[in-house]
Length: 331
Image (cartoon, rainbow, N blue to C red; front, side, top):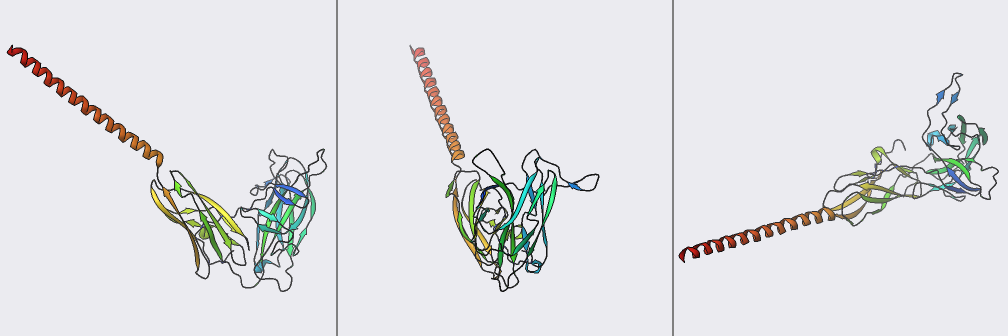
């Protein structure tokens, strides 16, 4: 959130996964991408270049952050059909909790839900290839709400329609909305777990951190608030967001030195100045290079011994030849 003073030392990447989520109506395969570049046509209407996929539905923005000062405003989401087929889109609001992998896990009884707070217009529309539809949403915060974040997902669903098979797959895209009601908030989070292999023979090492939200609003880890690994150099985790009441499991590849007994740590600093730190030890020893080096040294030793024996053999042969030559002259 803007204006946040807390800084996380662990890089956070908020990756919202819109694929393969489940609703009561069936399975939804989501396809989300960055906002396409509009191409003005001669008649000044906005069209979008199609991609060679029958289904390609995108939304912008991919998430909405609604602060206390923005709850009375009307917010817009642009839905673009860049596929080759026309689609029918139904729009609805769904309660969700944040999955540990960054996905949206839909639950009817999800805590801190704002599904009943939002109104959408339109709630159903047809979208031809290369065209867009703007969907507006308004928020009605009820009296005396629980302070902090309330969240809802705007789901843009394309029903499967009539098919000849027994299995129907709905497709769609979801945009999470984080609504912060007026009042004091707590942005606390903690590193509840940090794991890595205890031993590495070289190469990149996968380090995983679990960040738990212990406050009352979502927590972003990105930019200056990124989550870092300290120890034998710093490494930044990908950007991520931890929803209120949730936790995120995030991973990064760490480049270790050639050899070390490294203590890696990750910490989150909160507004109150209290930070939580978790540490893991990794022993890095280059087994393969070490074996190659030992093999090379062993070969050198063998060659030196062989050369020395050959030298001794030559000396003994020369002494024998001299003795034989001297003995023949005396006779």
